[in-house]
Image (tube, rainbow, N blue to C red; front, side, top):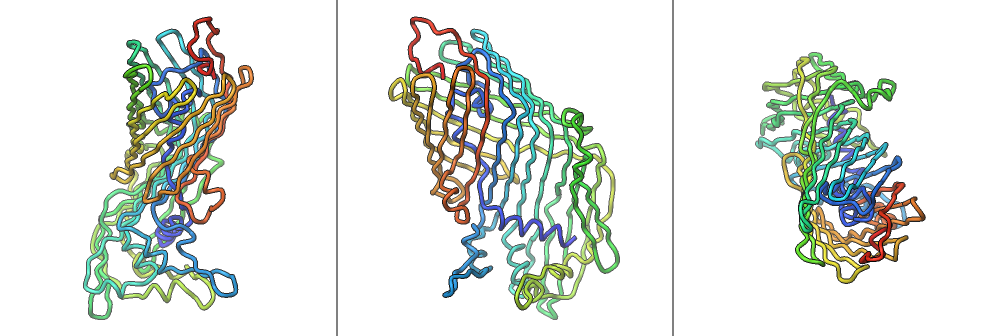
Length: 460
C-alpha cells in the first residue's frame, strides 16, 4: 500500500508541466482545430488525417529546479524544504498521451461531417499539502491536529470513436456537435475523500479515520492489495499483452461523451466562439475491483524524516509503513463510473488584415472537481496558400513564462503541422511548468479556386 502513496508523491515532483492546449484553437487552416470547437467550419472540402500524436503533462507544484540547490563544487543536492515551500494546499498532476489513428472530415456546402478514432491515456493525480509535508518531514509538526492526507487518482486508457457534424446556420452563425463512443481499456481511481490523521500529543500516537476506496477496472491495470494484521502490500502493474487491436474499438467497459461548439461572426473581421468538450463518463464493468477502507485505526507515532533518508541516499522501504500498515481494506467487485475532464473554450479573433489574425482565448478544465483556468493571446500569419505560422502567449497555474509556436505547411494536398504551447521548455526543461506538443500530417483537398475568392490564404 505504501507504494500507492509514494507513486503519487514522487510522480508529482517529477512531472512539472501543464495540461491545457491553446495554440491549436486558432489554427483554422487545419481540420484538427475542430477538436477544440466542433462549431468551426473547415476550409477544406476533404481532409484525411493520418496517424498523429499529442503529448501533454501538467503539475501546479514545484519544478525540479525548485527542489535543487547548487553547492560550491558545482554539484546539486535535493532540498526538500525548498520544494515544499512551493506546494499549495491543493495540488494536481495531469499527464496525457493521445494517438489519433485517423480523422476524416468532409465539407459539403453548409454542412460538415467527420469521423475519427483515437487512443487516449490520461492520469489525474491530486494530493493535499499535508500529505507531502508528512511524507517528507514526519508527523511531529501535526501534534494534536486532525489533517486530511487523502490523495486522489484517476488514471485511464481508452479508445474513442467520434462522429462529428456541423452546420452553417446563417452566414454568421455555425454550430457543431460530436458524439464520442468510449471503450474503456483500463482504469485505476479513488473515491471517497476521507483519510485523516490525528497525532496525539502523548507518545505521538497516530489515529487514522478512513472512508476511502481504490477502484480498478478493465484489462490494462493489474491492481492487488493484500492486507494482513500488521502490514499491507500494494502492487500495480500494466498488462500490455491484454490490449489487442480489437479492444481499441470495443474494450468491454463502455461510455459516451459529447463535444458542443458554436461560432458567431460579428462582422467581417471579428469572430466569437464557445465550446464545451468531454462531457461524459465511462462505466467500468469488466474486471472491476474495489478496495475500501472505512473505520478508525490506531498506530504508534513515526518520524518519516528518519525513514525517508539514509546516510547518503533516499530510502523508501520504510516510508509510511506505520500509517498504512493496516487500514482494513475490503475487496468487492462492483461496477463504477469515472467522468472525463470537461473542458471549456471562450474565444475571440480579429482579422487585422487578410493574412494576419489576433485572438484571445479563456480556457478552463475541471480536474478533481475544481476549475483550472488559463488565458492565451494568439497571433497567426498566413503566407499565400502554402504556409501559416503563429505564436501564443499564455498564463496558467501561476506561470507567466509560456510562449508557444505553431505552423502548418501545405504542398499540394499534403499538409504538415506542428504545435507547442511553450517552446521555452526546450531551453529550460527543469524550470518550466508547461510542456506539450502535437505533430501530424493531413491529406487536405480544398475547394476549387474561383475568380471571386476573397483571400488566397484561405486555402491553406
